[in-house]
Length: 640
Image 1 (cartoon, rainbow, N blue to C red):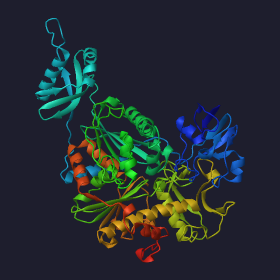
Image 2: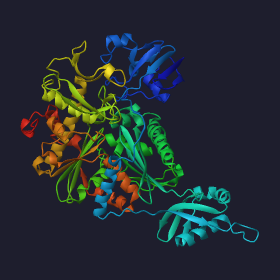
Image 3: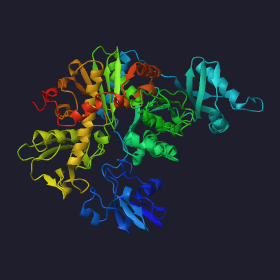
Image 4: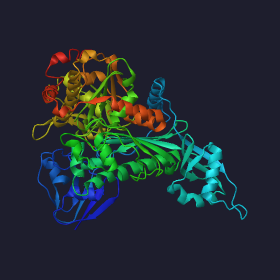
């Protein structure tokens, strides 16, 4: 029998199967993207598909109403094939792909964070220089009188042009040498690494192809971001992002570690990030920048510890098992060719060092970019992603920890959640009397709502609580036109009616969404509280708070304090610094000194394992209310 996956807005995908096979597993095998944050255990209710033809064996669930079930909607994770079927796979806002996006590098907002970070690092003595060079070489054409072999002819030309004695021509260059030399009449461009008195060839090409390019990558659990940069000038050539293809195996790192431990799982997870995610984004950016992928001579990666393991194809099981010792913190010698990245095969892949099982290289790179390691003031660095990572300290010490916040800050685990891209509700205010919302939506002025991103969720929950529409537990206690309830009594607040949304579906936030977000914010605050207690300090000691991550630049710090996510300190102390992991990775790809600095930052950072820390769970439970069970911690909450 066969299953036909009709992808909304795309082409159908057909796969052969046997009776009784699971629909979600078949979709994964067919490389069809179905959002499954819980990795198919039936708890999230987001892997919905609609039967178009045929029937499947599927029990009823609270995630699908009676009306929806009658209309053909099913959870793919709990559905088994019993005959030929055709199912519709919806292009929902929370689907992991979330549409690959290329950023407009002409906008000041897109380049400001990189230039500011560069300037700050330069002021600390980090020189933005590297060893990569492009040499324009003109050689004599061989003749019967001049029978010097190609490799010697190239070596002499490089020695003369670069002023070096030693020249290395690796196999990857040697096998192309004869063809490229003769195709260009012995006038070529040679790209490589100049190190003291030696030059290592990495690419030989036509004299018009002089680009030497670096690729900086932030591999998030939910989202992958990337920039291409000119290694000579530092100019950004292209910037883009897309969903992490691994999310089909679970929204969090634990589910993915479990999946990679199954037969063939490690390769599936590595293929999901390299083949399904990084490769198309790199190809898209190279096309945008009009360069060859072989011109990418160095890559840098900022990623959490689990993502690093799955990226290189190393068993990650030890990351989640006590005593939580990963396979590596630091890795030298990895090349693009080793992991089959679409770049020059000889290009080194610099991985920002991990700190602990749940504090990885993305935090090392982000901490370096935040510059808290070079300040006298005590600073709090908070990265909000699928995991919430916190660093506290200054030039004298750095303490770090991580909490499992879930994907809520990037729109995951939220019924209408999405990343902070076009169509996302990024800000909201409510009229206290009428409860009517005023929304700010990412995109053009006439952009309709598609879903809600992290910053929008913060605003919405803060406003619902301020207006006494929900109570401290996140339950609806006030009725009105915008408040609806399902057959089981669960409340939701409608932000956009179907005719007001881009998708033609209602955009709302329900009690399950609010509970998920309260747990996420509670994890963050309790982690901050525990970290401060570990060094015998309170929030009064904080001089500055740097907030990073994919939550969205529109984050309202006051509302984040109001709901008890951030400590109640002066708002002037907060600064949003965007994707600090990508900023740090950009610095490392551009600067040899930045690589050394990042390694020093990692070496000077102490990791606190919250899962074994006494008192953390009590702090977490206490923080799972709005704003907190201890009101004294938030004396300024909701004050104008």
